[in-house]
Length: 425
Ligand SMILES: O=P(O)(O)OC[C@H](O)CO
Image 1 (spheres, rainbow, N blue to C red):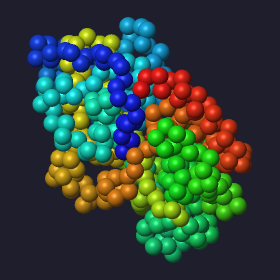
Image 2 (cartoon, rainbow, N blue to C red; image 1 turned 90 degrees about the vertical axis):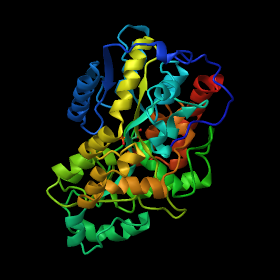
Image 3 (cartoon, rainbow, N blue to C red; image 1 turned 60 degrees about the vertical axis):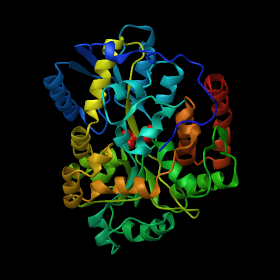
């Protein structure tokens, strides 16, 4: 979970939507939802939309607003001065708070209460991620933890136990046996980097060495523990020979058998199970010498502040429907993302899935056993995720010294905080 920042008393905003008496509002008959269809979910999103229209008579236009969270966010921000705004929009872990700072979204507590949406049934660790100033600014939708994916057939051929490594050191021990079973250009572990990605999985490694990106909003990239995390990363791709960087998509390299293991979103699970010609194993992320921890991630859905109250009410009805017990279960089964409601995790439908395909359960269990709130610097400082990824790529691709790589991005993250966050807290 990445619970909202705790500094500052109020945002100083009269957030749009707060004063609306929802009982006096009639929902609009047509709204727009901007999505990047996380986990290849366009079809299931459209199915849920069709069911919503059949039940309410409200038409939802599903717009592919980008190929990933960053593209949707850039389009949403660029559209703020136009009349092309959506009514409901994808709001990922590293973007929702910026939407709030920019007054682009409304708090949802009142309208969800008016709708009797049962917000207390959202998994608390997932719903609290969107809380700031005592209000929730999105509902959880396509929510994930990173998983350790491994090729069970290769594992067996290498004589390894059918489980993920408990520690990164154990994976290094296993890598020689794995390498013997792989193609010449293969590797025991393959990873991808990029915005909204590299700085997510690296949280596990920096935490595993006792470090962190930040303590609150104070950057801690220069502590010995954080630098040790960077040095572990450098060694993983360097002298240890364990890992290689996938040029495009590590999940594709995993499915093709080029790499024996990877870190992927649980939202990639259904795709991986369908694509692989081998048995796919899923496990918690390995621990480092100082322990472990997994970030949660993925996206929520927010309601646009620029929409009329009628459109906002219809959008809130839609996000309630999109994330109700039945639909979050359907969405989870179609993608691998976690059900966002406790009632869905406990439902007969999901329990049957967990019994027949236990890989679906790994992220839910990991959430309970190992989740840790994301570092504020990554999720609440605009642009910091991309800068942290830049440092990670310099270490992995250029072989840059970790202390130097972290030091090169830290001042820019501090400036982003001073200019774009601090004045609004
Ligand atoms: O790929 P997802 O949807 O699991 O999201 C991963 C990260 O949270 C994005 O910042």
